[in-house]
Amino acid sequence: MNVILDCDPGHDDAIAILLLGSKPYFNVLGVTTVSGNQTIEKTTLNALNVIDFLGLDFKVYEGSSDPIKRERVNCGEIHGESGLDGFTFPKHNKKKEAKDAVSFIVDAINSSKEKVVMITTGPMTNLGKAFLRDPNIKNNIEKIVLMGGSIGAGNVTPAAEFNINCDAEAADICFKSGVPIYMVGLDVTRQVLVLPEVIERMRKIGNKTSDMFVKLMETFNYNQKKVFNLDGGPLHDPVTVASLINPELVHFEYVNTEIDTASSSSYGRTNCDLPGYLKKKKNSYVATKINVPLFWDIIEEAIASYN
Image (tube, rainbow, N blue to C red; front, top):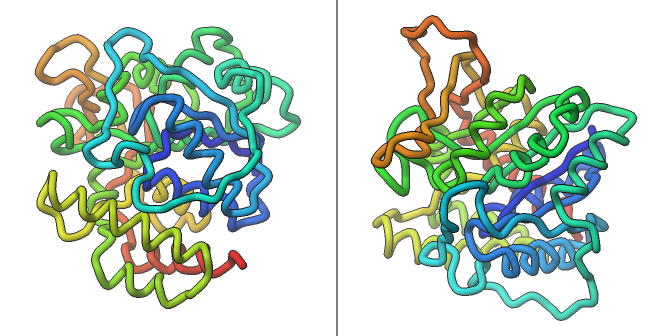
């Protein structure tokens, strides 16, 4: 499976990278970065650090620092000053590639002999800009699997989830692209909480990857408790990759989804018409259910697969 991961590491993005690297059937064409959980400089460094630490050979392409239209948004209160607070990565010589992320996405998709699966776990700015640059890339994308959106309430405004709120215009472009799109939103990701018993379960694996997981998640949970009063942070982003590892994990409903880019109070809302009120053409598969025990089995197996 040819995949590109577009991400903004971020504690949960780091675990998405971990999952991708655990399965040899993922042919990772590249990892692209975007400003979101932290600035573009920090998310790029974090991607390089995680990939090097895990011993993966993924190439990293730095992407957009600014959304298509709105002002930049970052999330330091959850992910800390570095974007990956809690774990000290060893020094290394891994560098980002010279090509920018948008150019890489366009070129890699157009040149791929097989259709590409686009996984986005941050704001959709890079992919939105890629569609603007070359709309024909849609012909060689198998599907888009994104962490973002919500059928119900948001997590940064009453209406909007963080990734969509960061760049609703980019999300709107992607949802209107005609490519099959699978939205893994807050409705399912809020169910996979890194509770203390999950941390202890992963600690028992006893390898360096479990050490990274435990230390990152302890800080992630501390910040989630401080900001949202949660005993365990929701591990949003890895659900995208986990749903590709095991299609039984997440149940999707095929619906019409529209992105609100017009209003102020509801900017970034994903209006998912599950009842079919509007009688509009269906354009997205929206996650409605998740097998939580299976998710943690997938995470545990992935961590244990690293030496």
